[in-house]
Image (cartoon, rainbow, N blue to C red; front, side, top):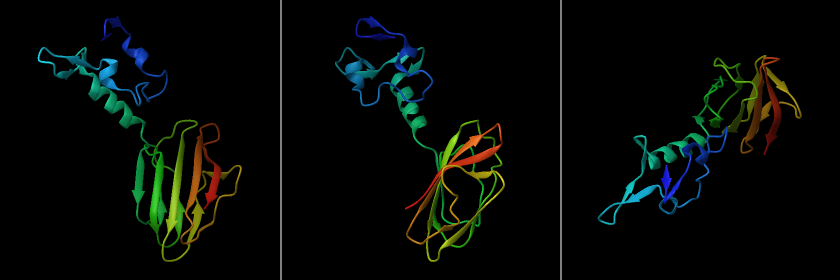
Length: 166
């Protein structure tokens, strides 16, 4: 890829092992992501047929947390494609069920629960284990609870390293 008169390895523009691009908060025109056309207008730079701007926008979107928003439910089954499961208006008791999707060893996710109307009792299926702090048994109206979980494939458990009542 040419940036100005320099040749740059396209892969060097992305941090190794991360989805976040090095180009965050970078002026793409100054970087050379656009070519100046004959008429003085800027046109997107293409690399092997790929629009560089569209590529970076996609990479930034991939880096955003994947959130599942639920109003209320009696049974919550985590899904490995989400980084945050946000229960925004829980009314009544809630059971956190074992996941039905496959998590990777060390994969993290958060469960945030806000109760409305009455306090919500919490119960847990067999894969949830408390580490560092006890698993909360109730969500008080107006005081959200956030439970951080990490999957451990060696023991097949969701380790709750921190459960915080606000």
